[in-house]
Image (tube, rainbow, N blue to C red; front, side):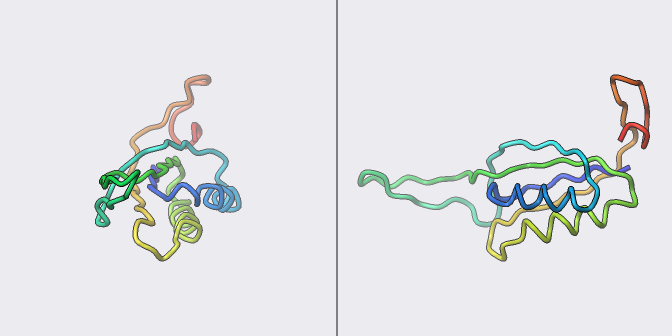
Length: 112
């Protein structure tokens, strides 16, 4: 099993979700997060005063999948989250030892 985590721009979430559904993913978890990468912050002007925006709003999504779904999921996220501009995000893929469905006590792929 794999855990795919992606940090994406907020306005790409609906398209990413639709693409994940199209490739057979029936569930995911999202978080509103803030962060920065290579683009660092930027300076804004508000009422005549300059201030620095250090953290950009992002969406973090997590998907737990079977090993054989990993390539399709990564490709789906990349297809819909890519704008070609700085700050498109990152995708992390990790191995999972176990998954447990609390309601039924199922373990492993049966719980996914």
